[in-house]
Image 1 (spheres, rainbow, N blue to C red):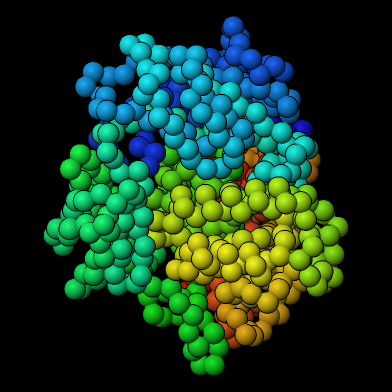
Image 2 (tube, one colour):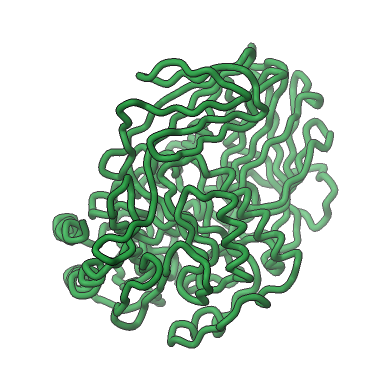
Length: 563
């Protein structure tokens, strides 16, 4: 039987009763106006869409109702409506001209009401959105959020969520699962900030293209022309996991001011000793990484505290890793900010939608039987368009983060369609990063990399016409007693009974298979995975993050062999 596990930070939250999610939620575009609305909200579930007259429960926002930390721990029946209510007043001196209400993410369809007035709608469970609520505000205000989530419909991206948890599929998430907050802005304000990294220079642009200036710490002042400026430091500090240097800057217009940061780094492909290599800052760089699902036992998609991201990042750096492949999930911006400042490369997946078939998408490809064409897979136009829309939102929301060096479009055929044309469309969105069109299998002609998954057999890969990436492998299972979600079930790709056997097996895998492949031309290797997740017990951390399953000194030796 599954048991309740708690992280140390989750336990501290329950004991204190204080919501730790008070950190500024948009670190690359800070203003001095900020009101956090996380905390205890009224909550109820109804089969009808009409605003309820009463609320029979309380929920701790931003934790989803399925999580322990929400105070509820149940999954509302699909098709029902989730209603949240929060009353608030604005602090004295807070309001300028306009007031914006922000949501980090709500899964999946959202309607928002302020003082009984409908403010707007949003569809999509993984992207941030904001509404102008100025005209509805009063001295005292009532905010009501209506959310609806239906996993029976696979049109919208849903990631690893499933109604029947087990194996590589996890407990679903509904409703609000990221920070809700307010900010006040002038009548003419900076709506969007774009930071385009072109190596030893960076272009900063704002929308709309207002007049103003950019002030960079240590570099001086640069005027905005048509809302844009290119900055080229004379002696640039390049960003890398070993030296994550960030330039802090502010943008000032006649009415508005924001604070942000950028980094300088180059990404390109070079032929070195006859083999194509992925390069960071002009030199071949081995991306020594881990698959990162981003699930926690007490908060599910939402960690118990924003510091939990840094905990995971630093734990993996201590084991010698420099890369995390964020797997089929979009995190709050705090995660990417921590990767930026602490020095961790991110390979960012798009969130899959569409019907999944174990036989077609996993079993047959694992033994080498693959479809030759994906042109007619997932033909439904609405499902395809939903993927395009979500992918574009993901890139627009995350593109300013220098730690993101690599986008993954499709993973193991889940929702995959017409990948050559999707790749061309994606490169128009962002041509500054590596793009993996088809991670695992169902490869077509166009992709920046040759991306393979290898489980259940030896890693025998040879470089070819594209840089070679081992985008998933390993996945060995070891279950430390007392730190396991389900002792009755084990999911992994090789089972070990004690920590020494497990450590020896992982070391042997790297020394005998990964290191030789690297010497022949392998450019990246992504081991499965950072942590256990529910029944999936193949993490390097236990699900409650209390056990590190590998010795850091031995893993650091492995890391040195991959440099």
